[in-house]
Length: 232
Image (cartoon, rainbow, N blue to C red; front, side):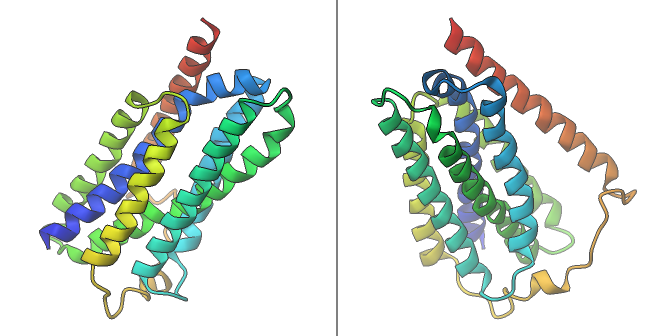
């Protein structure tokens, strides 16, 4: 049981680390590509929007088992990360790279949509492995992985190297997931049985809006600092 929790912790940690490592490099990358601040902000906004849509989409799919779905999400996300990093490196040697904006935006959209299924499925695993008495401890571990990823991500940023490193780590996590976490007999049916819950539900409304405000503030700070340093 403990080993399975560690695997989920590492998956969420590596995933959040890759998301957080991207924000600080937007400024320098955009300066090189000749993109405006609005275009650069679109990278983050599209990623976040697709993350939201992907989380809802993947968690409610029942056409494959949860383990296979989580592995698929991670592999698609890894491919999108590598493609973005390779294209960024290639564009660094090109004289005119502004026309690549839409390709970059598409890759970030694919990355966000596939990434949305990673924390959603990992959280569902934790919920399934815990009882009512131990659920708080399990979700605290999930939250710790989120927070630690956002701390380590910006710290390791520097060019496109962190994106390659994040891709390698996540690919290793896919292998670890396939080897360590067993298939569960009913793990593919949770999404269809989950009741709908409104974001305005009094039980979760405060947490939803607090998280939204904090996330907006965090992204503004990270992206703005990247532009500030790129201009120095």
